[in-house]
Length: 160
Image (cartoon, rainbow, N blue to C red; front, side, top):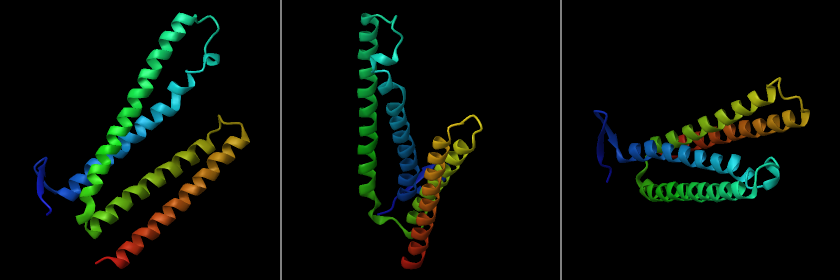
């Protein structure tokens, strides 16, 4: 059964609400991943700190970093659990709902491609191997865009 929810004075179906919240969940999980992948892990390594930082200060920092890492991992897990609960509600998705999901994914792929191309073209980057890597990944993202477009066309032609 597809209920209708009123949001900002407008009617919204369960599927639209799931999609709306789902996009926030994806963004939140991405944020949590980025936090983990950046500074926190890097600074667990004593060699990345100035020598004058004493053991006691470093030990205190490590405890806090581990707390941040653990809580960030827990946030990611909580968002993943919420996403999994919502996916269970996707059985009644319409053709338009599914197409909208893949159009959103296409936008993510295009955004990633455009970002990688921008990095590759940045004149501040003088290392040619870095430029090539970003260009290569941008090309992969463009292939992803094309693959998602094909999926959308298959859905359009296969579902009624």
